[in-house]
Amino acid sequence: MSLGAVACAVMGVVMPVEAPVEDVSLGRRAAATSQASPDSQLPLSAFESIWALDLRKPLTESGTDAARTMDASPATAAGGGGPFVLVGTIGNSLALVRAGAGGAIEVKGVGEQINGAKIVAIRPMQVDVEVGGARMTIVKPREGSGG
Image (cartoon, one colour):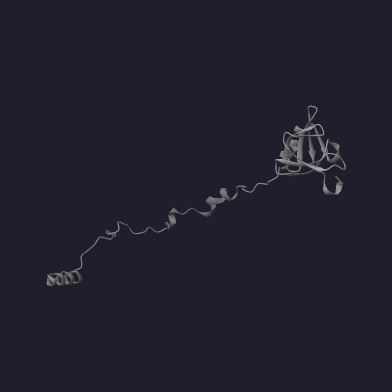
């Protein structure tokens, strides 16, 4: 029997068996290349419409949106002209307000009241309030205006 095993081993080395190009034992095909033919590639000019898109938009309201907001409000109070002074805002959910000239700063949300004014909407540096049925926008005063 050992003579038969040696004979099979010698025949396996001496007489190679032809195999197809595909690797039959693993069931895999040859890997495809990622390069396409020059005819199938698009020229750079085909991408100009994509490059022209304005994908970076400002995070604050644009001038036209702000003007539309101001036109929708019957009155705009900057600083001390309203029922309170807007100290600042935290996103679109909280407003930091001062009720009087020397009053403490309070944190208010939409729907809450201060000095008879109901907070209707909060935007960065602006708060819409409703006083006696009239709607007005209170804007945070500039740093140098003493508010």
